[in-house]
Image 1: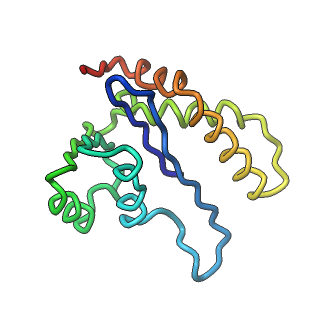
Image 2: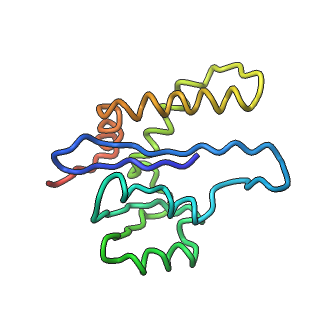
Length: 144
């Protein structure tokens, strides 16, 4: 899973996410690559400029992604969160909501888990109050 919570003064909060199911096929990627993060398309839907606050997942620190950020510095500013600081990342609140909802799911297969996760993410996506709560949970405030 990959996700992004988005906040803009005077507008409703938003959340973008992508879920990838890995079935062990040879031609199938095991996870998300730097291009997947680049292509989340938040700028198209949100407009710019964008200030992106990222955790220190290794893929966020790759050279190609850093080059993309540098090449788009006119609309994209990136700040890295300190190491081991999930308490400052609103997206961690989203993952917590998803885990809480599917924690007791007795799934028959991976596809059922994937459907449950996508369903819960879609519910959260259309509840800006939940996305706002994830920011409030960090103790951080957004200045307009």
